[in-house]
Amino acid sequence: MAVTSFDDLFRDLAPGASAQAAGIARGYAGPPARSVTARAGLDRLRCASLLKPLYAWAAAAHIDDAERWRRHAEPAVVVSSNADTLNLWLSVGPRVILDTIARRTGVAWSPPNSDPSRFGSVEIAADEVATAYAVLAQAALAGEPVAAAVLGWMRAVGTGQTYGAREALGDPGAAVKCGWYGAADETCLRTHAVGILPGPGTRVAVVVALTAQPYTDEMEREIYQARVAEGLAVEAEHEKVGGELLRGLMATTLSELGDRSA
Image 1 (cartoon, rainbow, N blue to C red):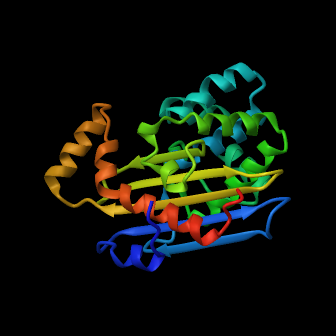
Image 2: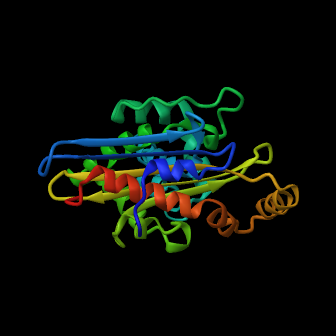
């Protein structure tokens, strides 16, 4: 897809919108490590589904029954199952999962004070997500079985849940995870994505985009919330509101990384 600049993307943001992008390219082989980050609006956003592969990876160390772990972890990643994510989150414990991620990646996140049981309320920044996924991806490339399984499930995420992320990265086989939500008390729709492009050896490129686009029309919000309450699909609404911006952020980040070897 056509690549623009972060300035152009942010210039077109509506009042009240937030957008972040971050990328990391690093590993043995290829050029020196490089990172990119850009931000407009809020410093931190809630991006529940984007963290599900990391939650699954961290939970594995605390569940003795590998089959039970896989039974919940795979759908949490591949089809973004909230029920299976919640099973891992509560059975292992929010603090244990987040502490394990911090120990493995150096990225420390906190459970929400209001209700720690809500895995989707963890607030994050795009550069933190890129750092954590770079560790996960390099662990997979180095042969860690759990990390490799999680990365494989990300490659299996269906096109209907990716908002064109693979096309934006120019790699139909990229490992991706996307997420979308608009809470009843919010005036924005949040749409976000991470993409991983493995390279030779332990070389990896990670691209992250987070968006929160205003969604203030009362009737549209009521229809959206009614669909969410009924368990109906709302991906098309997120595509309409934030899909183009999401792809633009990802393509621009990869271009700024300048690391096509990955």
